Image 1: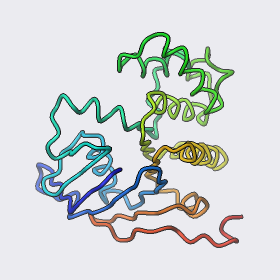
Image 2: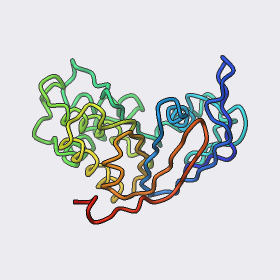
Image 3: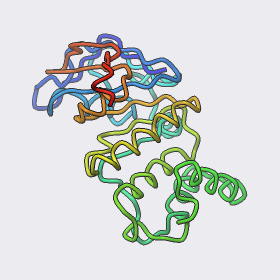
Image 4: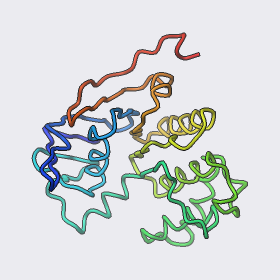
Length: 229
């Protein structure tokens, strides 16, 4: 579960990025986080992953209290949260298999665990036939699928996708969102940060809107039949 209670975050320059944000995302939910640039979305992600601590209020993520988490606990928190970025952040000199296996080696997985888990995750994202390819030999959509596989491989309870379709055409964007929905259907909590209003409307999930460091609305988007077509 992700819970923010009256969270304030102030940067060194003195400006408030968050001005008393309270949200709760239950285990297994699929939510969109939307808002204009500079609204506080990136700050929320950094608080969830332990990159930042709140100036006031409480942040609880998957059993960890972020306002008082110890430095040595942060890697354990991050194992529960997989992050997918707009720019993929893949290692070009590694193959598809090696990119995903590397994420497991970082947390100390055995070679047997890697050999069992990596093919399963690559099959889940539709890349089982491309294990020996390098990222620069793949399309943007395939690279994003690889990034999702890497985020999934350590079996996190939560996936955060930060503008996951920002570099993709509409067809590939829909495929990535459908994949994230499939992952959610398997029980993983999914939080998607996006500017793509058409996808938000099409998928009809809970939408948390933030502006100027405040939650301005929080609820499921009502999607009409016309919009869904």
